[in-house]
Image (cartoon, rainbow, N blue to C red; front, side):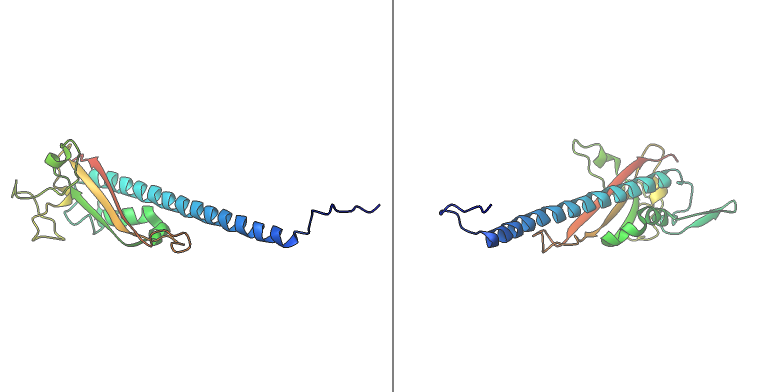
Length: 188
């Protein structure tokens, strides 16, 4: 049995291909955007946890030397990784997502933290010149990372440049400045 077309219908085989291509492009843009956003959130979670672990590691090791933030040491025959190495190990291979990142460890200025909108800033030696100076920046007046007394805050900051995998394809910015700061109360 042959079916006949009505006189108003025409063949539209090429229109279907064009419609599929348009829908596929929009779908792929959405899918890659979702992947990139998930990758960003994943890295943000990894680096925040690394900073949190580093801050906890710093506050329980305030009895170590002033250079322990960047130099590992041995106490009682037990090796201890420096705070920076500890944070780097927590970030692991995900550190490749953040270009030129650096880890900073410093005691916080309590006056700035007590503001209505807290600001995490370095504790200065100007208020108390007897505090030990930061050995990595001795001329800046910064206090050593372990100069925080009991209950004061020690901060770990990770900052660098995050670069999306497909920035031009998704019309995103090509780089994002990341600045992750975590503080913890000193136990020393």
